[in-house]
Image (cartoon, rainbow, N blue to C red; front, side, top):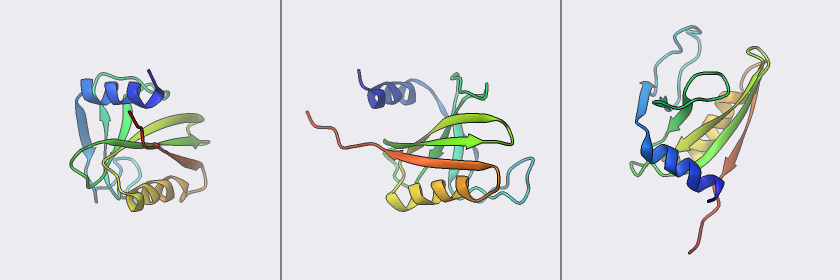
Length: 116
């Protein structure tokens, strides 16, 4: 099974909780405003000890289209976050969101079309 199909399996088998809707502020850092819906997959585990983070875009199909890999020197961690239902423009917004500070960097890895 491929990397993407395993992520699809996780996404399909877990509840997606949006706890930070588009336009809301970060609970600890009020200057941070979420440009898209942001949440997590309930009952999963990520590198930071919390659930797997998910950015949710405007496409209601909620298809997994990419992952964003982040490195945060403030928290001294690295994570993979899922991007579901995101357009190309929304993927750019997420990448900019994570690169627009002095302690975090990110790269978006887009899913290639799968045939067969």
